[in-house]
Length: 77
Image (tube, rainbow, N blue to C red):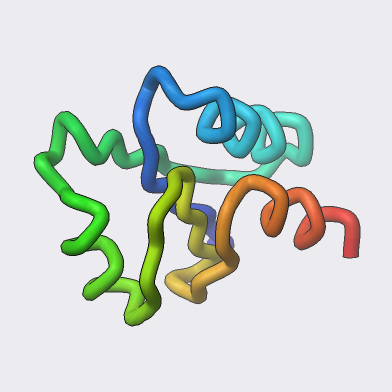
């Protein structure tokens, strides 16, 4: 099964945009609230092996996509 993973915060408008993109496209996804899980941006940077400074950060089948604009481009392709 193809699955998207969205790392973000509940109060982030771009995180909400990423969630809505997945819902609109009928895709399976999981949302990981970084605040609830105590995941720092530095920890996520290490996990993704890329420097991040914003959320959301999105993966598709564990492959890094990027932020909400990157996800939008991914769906448009």
